Amino acid sequence: MKKWILAVSLVFLCFLPISSVFAAAVKPIKAAVKPVKAVAKPVKAVPPKVKSIFIFLDGKKVAFKLQQPINVNGRVLVPLRDIFEALGAKIEWDDTTKTVTAKKADVIITYKIGSLTGNRNNEIIEIPVAGKLVEGTTMIPLRFVGEALGTNISWDEHSQTVLVSSKVKTEVEVTNILEGNVVEIKGGDKTDKLVLIGFDQLNPNFEAEATQWLSEQLVGMTIHVEMDSKLREAHGYLLAYVYLPDGSLLNSQIFAKGYAKLKMTAPNTRWTELLTYVQNGAKNHKIGLWAPAPAG
Image 1 (cartoon, rainbow, N blue to C red):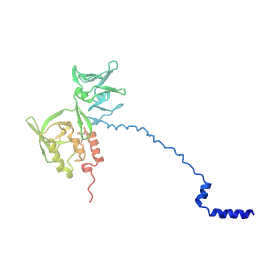
Image 2: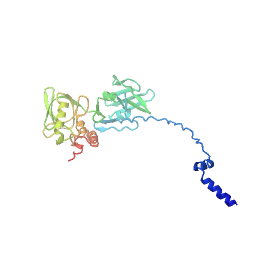
Image 3: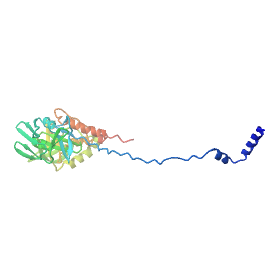
Image 4: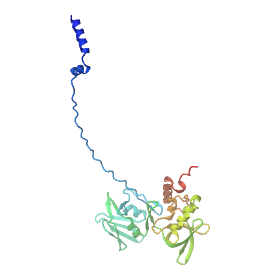
């Protein structure tokens, strides 16, 4: 009898809609999903990378021990002790008055941190930006150092470096550019010819372009000429480093543009380190003669 009832029940279920069966067996489940609020994490501002300021003194890169040079309103400040010692001066520091005294030969320089004036052999020198202490290091304007010790300070745009030269320079006027990188100059009633130190010849592939560029940079301009140990080459031309009116070193621009390969010949090697640095930059950026040869 039980078997007969079970069989009838199964047959009855077969005629019910499937949805009804599941509806009876399964209870609906309500989703209990809570809205998630987006939490914005604070984004820390990444300070821009400060580009290093390299300083070359008479061709050698100056090594600063604790603090690197900084730019303050377009003026370069350098560690006082490092730069004065590099220039051959002896330093005395008065911590009570925050005053430095530098001595070199018959020159005595004094400067008080925070002041807009310095003193050279009792002569007042005005300073556009005051010196200051940076993490315990006394920083002073490089321009003041140059004026106080009689050195030439210039910014070389192509190498992005500060050039400090303690050597005597002669002011001359350029009258012409001759074949083979020979520059005609005139000083007073005297004329002469010079060639740039650092290379024997321009790269043949860029000779025409380089000669035209040199003419644009030099002809009719007043320049400053700096000599090295050996004054003249075999043809009697002066061997020179040439400074343009803006203070940049023409010799370095030749290598920055990739117009020639560096070749320094002893004893004229004063600016070798700078010129090597500039040429390496041109190599890395594949400029001029360092650019890949065109395909085909």
